Length: 83
Image (cartoon, rainbow, N blue to C red; front, side, top):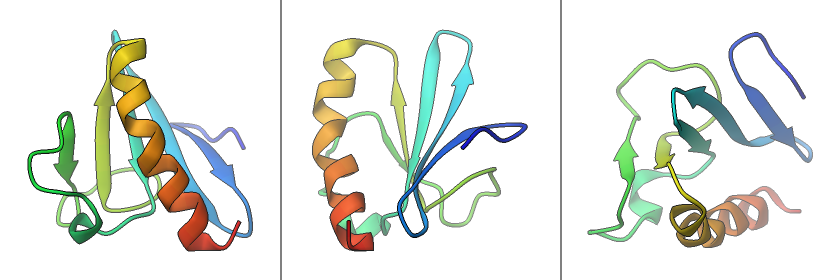
């Protein structure tokens, strides 16, 4: 669902939001930082940082290969909401 500053993907509630930032995509997922293993690349805990969109987990994606590694977390967010 398009919004002014981001795009949201919704089942019964938003599970992911994307923001385009230059050559990168910021992907916010409805997950807790504790759901993300230590050392996960391109990840940031945004629980205490203001941002538009959904969730407390941010991934920065700048290539198709980086997106491939984020797919499992998108599925995790989808499954936690009850999709």
